[in-house]
Length: 101
Image 1 (cartoon, rainbow, N blue to C red):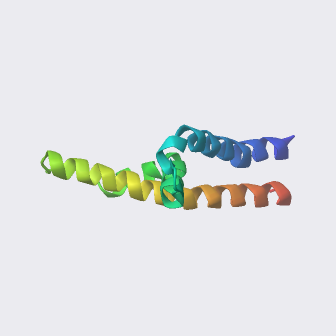
Image 2 (tube, rainbow, N blue to C red; image 1 turned 135 degrees about the horizontal axis):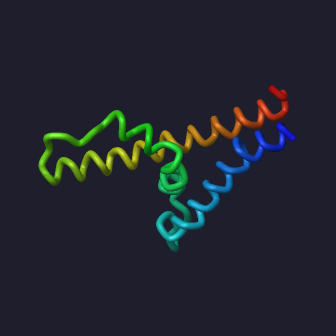
């Protein structure tokens, strides 16, 4: 029972969240020419990495354009980092589920 709970929390739930974001942002990263995979990676990784970026780059003492630029950089880098964090979290959860620790 403990392995099932660990599998659901650390593997299945992040994959469901990633699939929900993929469906939600489908219109953003698809075009008539095809799929923009970098933009897809960023859109799917946002919920897993944005909290890591908002600690590093905090927009203080900027004008409006500087603040919007820093927020945009936070979202882009947070999405890229979040894609890697998603893969790491799923692999770590799979290994821990199989090992039983």
